[in-house]
Image (cartoon, rainbow, N blue to C red; front, side, top):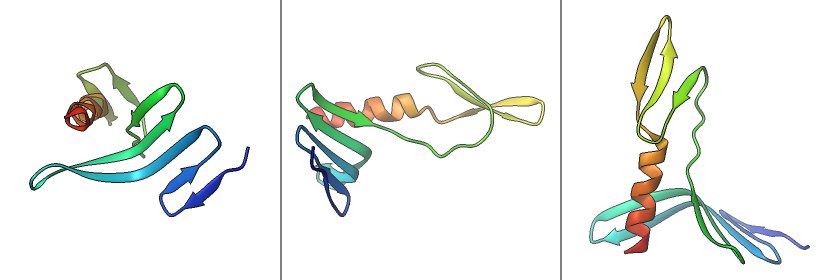
Length: 89
């Protein structure tokens, strides 16, 4: 399989990956998708984080350990669900 990379895009025989995709889904309303993957199995929207440390996560609640406490952080799952919902518009 030959893979070519062009800026933020990677093209392969059966896959296209676009990194850091920004779309205007409505006038002045934007979403930023970390990784957009298109292949024979469908379209995939992936969110990545470069977090460090201990984490607990469920669909709606994510927590990061700070000292002896668990502190709630923004849910990447909910963020990605929002991106998918707006992308489908």
